[in-house]
Length: 228
Length: 354
Image 1 (spheres, rainbow over the protein chains, first blue to last red):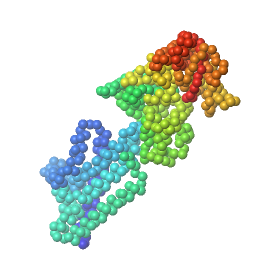
Image 2 (cartoon, rainbow over the protein chains, first blue to last red):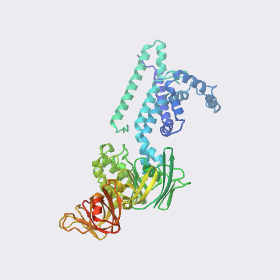
Image 3 (tube, rainbow over the protein chains, first blue to last red):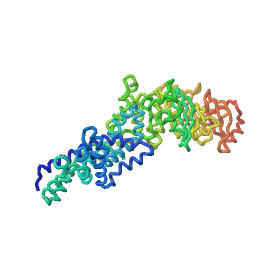
Image 4 (cartoon, helix red, strand yellow):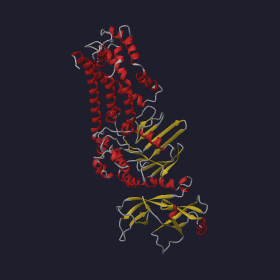
C-alpha cells in the first residue's frame, strides 16, 4: 500500500475540482433557487425538472453530450476556440463544467427548500420594518438559510469526490492534468495494483468521513435555526 | 386623514372599499372572517398590490395609477396575527431591527420607552422560541412601534392567543391608544376587543363597507346588527373627577352627571370609557331613593326598538349627547308607558371600565 506522486496529484486535482465547482455552484444556484422558491411562473416545473435531470440520467449520457458540446466540433467548444482559448474537452475547466452540471440538483434543492421556509411572512414583516428587498435578503434570508447552504455545500463537495462516469467521458484521465482520484483508483485496479488502490481508497473514505463529522459538529455547536 | 379606494376582484373574493378614516384614535375594521378586513389592511400597507387602487395619507399619495410606494418606504407599523419574530435574533435584536433602519430624525420613540411601555425588560436576551405567545406578541408590537410609525396597522393581534395572554395584551393596547398620538387601524372579529379599544368602527361584510362611524353611533344604530344581539351594549365617554373617594370608589363625570366605579388606578382628569350592557340598565320614572344601585343617570328616551327576544324591547336613550341602550320587558314598557322624548332615570347595574 503506497501513495505515488501521481496519486497525490490526482488527489489534489480532485480536491481542487470539488472546491471550485462547489463554490461556483453556490454562487450560480443562489439566484436560481431563490427564483424557484418564490415564483408562481408556469415555467417553474420545467426548470425544476431540468435541474433534477442529472439525478436520473446515467453519468455517461451527460458526459457524452458534454464531450460533444465542449469538444472542438461542439458549439461551446468552437465558441471558445474562436476566442482563442481552445476547446474545453480534456481540460480542467471542462471537468468543472461537467461536475457543476452533475451536482446541480444537490445544490439547488436544499437552497430552494431553505428559501421557501425563510421567505413568506418573515419577509413581509421585514418590509414593514423598513428593510429594502436586498437588505431583507442579506439580513434574513441568508442567515435563516444557513443550514441549507451547509447541506448544499457538503452534498456538492462529497458528490464531486465520488464522481466517475461523467469525468471519464469528458477526459478526466490525463495523469497530472485531469486525472482525479476515483479514476486513478480504477486504473490501479485494472493494472491489478490493489495496494495502490487501497491507499487511495482509504484516503477518500477517511477524508469524506472527517468532512461529514466536521459538518455535524459545526451544526451542533452553533445555533443553526431550525424553522421547520 | 387616511383616504383610500380599493377594488379587488379575485373570482370568489371581491373587495370594494372607498373610505376616509380619521387621523386619530383606533379605527376597527370589523367583520366576519372572509369579509375582507385583512385584505383591506394589507392593501393599506402595500403588502397587496391592487391595480387602480388609490391611497392617500395626510396628503401624501402612497398609491395611485402611476405611484406605488414600496412597503418599506411607508412610515407605518404592522402587527401581524402571529408575532412572526425573527427566530435567529434575540428579542433585543428583533426590537431594534426596524429602529436601526431609521434615520436619526425619524427616531421619535426610543427603545427604553417602548420596552417600559410593554414591560419586556426581562425578555431582551432571550430567543423568540423561549417566549410565551403573549410575550412574543408584545415584542412584535414593540418592534413595530420602534419604527416610530405615523400609522399603526394591527391585524387581529390577539386572535391566536389564549384567554390568559389576551388578558395580558389588552391593557397594553389600551395604553398604546391612550399614550401614542398616532392613528391605529385594528382588524378584529371579536366585538369585546372592539368595544374596549375602538373609537371608530368600519363594518365589513362580504368585501363591502356596510357601515362606518363613531363607535357609539354604530353600536346603537337600529339598522345594524350590533343592537340585535344578546350582548347589545354601548360605550360611554367619561372623565375622572375624583380618582379615590373616601370609601374607595372612583368618581367619573358623564357630561354633568356623576358615575361611580370600583376600579382604581385612574388619574384625575383622565378621559376614560365605560361599557354598559343593555341588559344592565333598569329604567324608572322617578329617581329611586332607596336602592343599592350607585349609578342613576337622567336620560331622554330616543326611541323604542324591537328586540330579538319577543318579550323584550330595546330602549335607546340619550344621556347628554351620548347614547345608552336599555333592554327591558315589553310588560314594563307598557307599565311605564314610555314614549319618545320622555325624561327617564336609567339605573345602571354594571359598569365595565374600558
